Length: 360
Image (cartoon, rainbow, N blue to C red; front, side):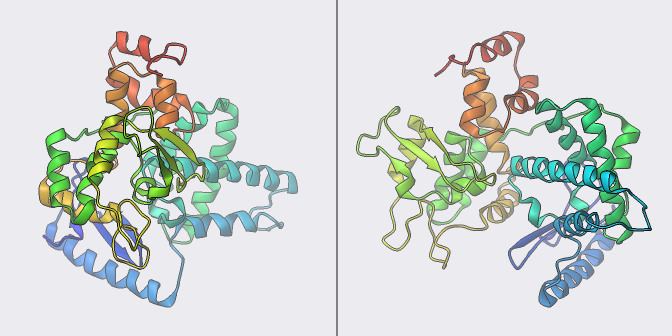
């Protein structure tokens, strides 16, 4: 089977995954036939390459979002919305943009590079869940969904998506269901690391020791690490400056992470911890690289799932939910609870929900 065509564990359909000019495209080929999928994949890749060569930015959700938002600056006879209605929709759209950025950040993906088809039913469900986490009322969420519905109808009318996922969600109701998290084993993480080249062989273990997102950890520099003169837990910190939300945070490294750093050879040419010899100096496409390695080593999960493993294990060993939330960089402690408490016993939840000092 071509490397660009695969079947996710939660779907019978074949999917396309391809990177063109640094942007990853991942979408359903809407067929269970291998032969049809391969043909569709070749045609779609050719189409995407043509768009990239022409510098076209359509089919991106960000492009559709911007076009619809700007159209609300002026009265349009097609919809006939008043100035107050258009202003209210723009307010909701700003909140939609911020929240979707958080949704995609949690997936270790960039909303500005997402195709319109990637805003699916799962994305809408996560949007609603995060608005609830932020304390928004049902009435406010419904107002946001009204604007969201018009936005996705606009994108559907452009021919970029086949179905409006907001309408799908409204038929389903406010019930949210999170997919099961597939937690990689320690053995699988080590096997994945052995497949990686250069100092990337340490990268999966480092994610397991820190719970960091792939992108933010791939861009850390030695200058961001303080206290290695006394490499003992409690004395070494790491400042994360390239988080997708732009919020700089500093964490105290556990001994497991410190021991990994002690094994990494420093480069005279690059300031990055996980460096390479490209003009960027770091592994810009770490997620894509490890996706390929994961198929070869039968990893059975996403590289990003190592982050979930870290959070669940820390909660199980007695860290408070407040500490885990701050450490891994969730925007809300309720998001941490929603993702991980379903994997804890009642006793573990009581400990995690203590006053915030447990494990500190």
